[in-house]
Length: 67
Image 1 (cartoon, one colour):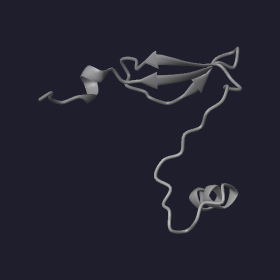
Image 2 (image 1 turned 180 degrees about the vertical axis):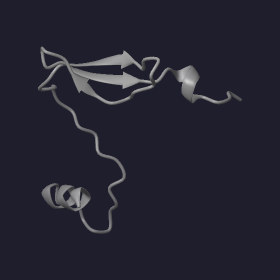
Image 3 (image 1 turned 90 degrees about the vertical axis):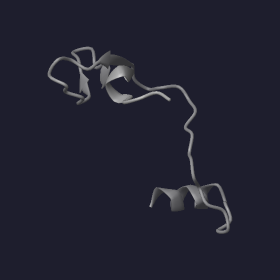
């Protein structure tokens, strides 16, 4: 499991639980966020320049109510 590998590599004692891992660095590829189209397809894709396209839903489409 990846958590076990992280704990081993970072020498984290068993009494501690890894809840969150944050990766910091520079990307090796170009990625852009696109709005989801009318077909609601959220699959990632690459164009001819190998740009990674990540479709994201609009907040109004995922938030049901605000209190």
